[in-house]
Length: 417
Image (cartoon, rainbow, N blue to C red; front, side, top):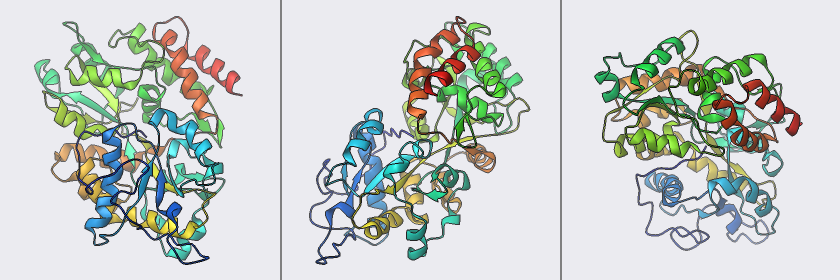
């Protein structure tokens, strides 16, 4: 999950990439041979696309410090989110590779060989793994073992422009939202050079978010299942929103979710599916009141695609216990609640949800809770990056009606193997 936040938190005086966050040796890493601090156990390799990403990680450090461990410190380094999934494999092969790395649950299978199993470390540390969101724990499990501790559990949401809905005389959607009602609303909002909805070329924005609302995912028993008739039907329904129903503009090949996001915030689109990690961005960056609803399903009941990320220990780490101790500190109920309150991420621990909910409308909180209760994790395969890349390349033809969803998904399935 890429996290791009605008809200900043001063976790410490300075935090330069590749440098100690606040100077000096810190954390808990020790070299078993001489007892001195092992810097690799206190280093994390992650995605740092921009200042907002860096502030995201600073907030975890700040949360531990605010909890009483004022000396806690983690050194950060990493490329952009887009580059991370390729470069992390090279970085972890180096002799000085950091001990802590991040992964999305959706990419855990892809990075499985880089991540050390954590089950025994958790047992030795007395960490109760059952406190974390079940869907996220499933997503972060590779070959039967936990490979990362989740810090968030984020169901995809339907963001909507309340002013556009009210001006059109429409009832505001909530946790129960049917596809029939969604399509009716989208058509009513599509007028005056504005669209009711926005799509991108990305498979997750919104094809998978919409298929998950019906309980349909892209894998089965650990294997790609792209030619599943139910998935094909759902993806075709999404593409028909453009070429048949004309309630959204067709994306160009490779168009990212950022295009739809900006169109929504500019007031040119009535609805857009996105992650809750953008909740604060929408609320603070839009000139209108923003609401959230569950992505529409056939029967109107909520069903979520839960995404999120976690901290893992590199398999090459020389002091896995020390690195894991640092991870435990960053994923306590208090810390994930602190991050949720300050950055908008939905915590991976149910008891910490109140931190995220603080100051938010009750209706929004209920939508998120409903989706967390019914949601399923996006579980992928080691070849998922190829699926994402190829779908972004070919989906534009589907949205324009030049190819069917079956054509595209079959082509990708055959190409990926």
